[in-house]
Length: 205
Image 1: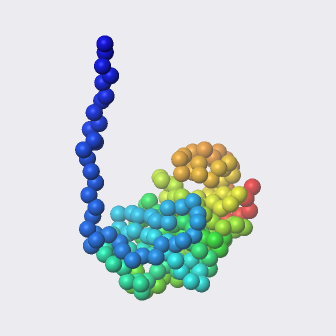
Image 2 (image 1 turned 180 degrees about the vertical axis):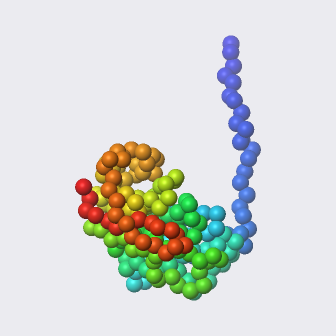
Image 3 (image 1 turned 45 degrees about the vertical axis):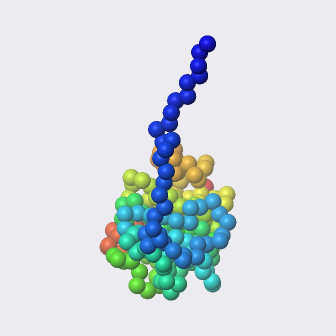
């Protein structure tokens, strides 16, 4: 009679260890908005989190080294007139972050080295054109200055292209799904520190 052999897992006796309180980010009022978003984005320099804000939308940007209890008066990025729904760091510049909001706009921000010392209210570029809230953002992983933004029943590519994709989330998995001949471009000039990014929006095809 053969015996059933159960393969032993290599991780059977592996347990996680909680980090100490001084290594966590504490006392941050994360947004209570219900949306399909992580409400958080991180890169090698900063961590950004969407927070509760009165009179508009905001998110907080912290240097990775600034752990522990975060003071309630810590400066936010607060240029949107509606709640912020998604934020995304640029993969090619650790000081550039994009934010999408319920106010139907996308804003591009430049975070100073070392983090914020005062509230940041003026974006480098504001992209208008969506007729509904903007809830999904995704930078192109290899092409510089190409950003996808999507809202309810709409999807667009900003900062270099506007592409009639069939699904907004497809851009997160593969940017090669859109025929190059269908792309259209318009441009907006940004400060020299970010070079020339493209960014006007035209009506969805």
